[in-house]
Image (cartoon, rainbow, N blue to C red):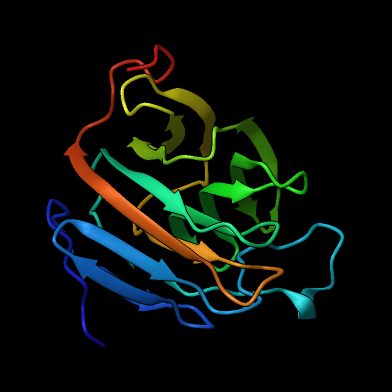
Length: 202
């Protein structure tokens, strides 16, 4: 398997999941195109055998605090099309921060945290242009932030998945109800450490 290297990200990324995603790196931009009927979601009311999967691109940042952020643009076509930052520990312990087309067909910041089963939380509607997403590790805790200008960050989720050791982090695109979705990630930035205050917008 060929590793994908992104400028500014100090660890290689590897493809996994099915149907595979199609990554293209141009300068400092990552473009991901999902396969059809692709999603990561364990529906609390669903059947275990019907659990979907999605291609993703993740790597190992190591056992230290960090922030990973990106500006995300999505070619929305079908409801639930999304580009996302993904935190992945195992097939039943993971979380994603999405820029997603809602059932009302409005671009929306959405978070999903999975501990055996998934939850699903729509946070706020965005204007339709790019949205900045950020995942932070702070000890055993994780934080998801989103920003409409890349300067002031809204805290959307603060949570734990238990032990953080071995967590993979990266990118995905999904199209649960469609034939595929393309998401573009640019302004990708990795920083060691976590913000001193996860709630003050910094």
